[in-house]
Image 1 (cartoon, rainbow, N blue to C red):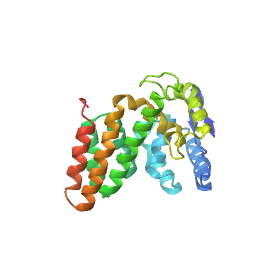
Image 2: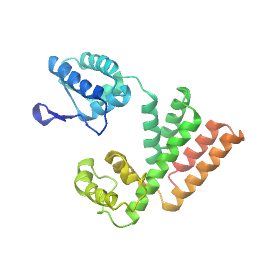
Image 3: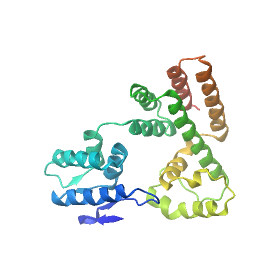
Length: 243
């Protein structure tokens, strides 16, 4: 539901199907705490906080209290405040990695990979996340090339996507012509990002990257290469501006 704050600021708490009652309790507790201190929170800040805390009640409230004291006399908690105050999690680093990959940001991708390895995330899990991102980009490319979506640019805003692209995606999903786990079955924001970024890649390149990742998987299982080096080499290749 939405809490309408002053000056048109909207704090949106998603109510996706099947979410635990714990999240509903958290929504109420967050509102009470913000109201007590006469503070507001931007939607982006809420999303960032949830990503870092997993919407776990005790930790979310504890981190929100820190944020309230951190902003001092300022009335609104911003996304940047959450990034500065709340510690980076594996989920953050995974998001950083996939965002850097789809944005062809070579340095950021390598930094995110190192952060994940330093946090102890297994290289097979990292590989799985990279494969998932490449598949999303490939499926987005298929959707764009199908000609069944309204024309858009990579700079489109999420609100524009919701109004103009999402209805067409919902129609495609309703036909059941696409596989169950196709991109259209994912959260709209995931689809939005994939569509925005797929223009940086060609269809043959993305197919080739999946072949490369299959070879890396084989390399992991046969111990024929250093996992970090194999992943780094792939990211350097995939994020190359020339590719």
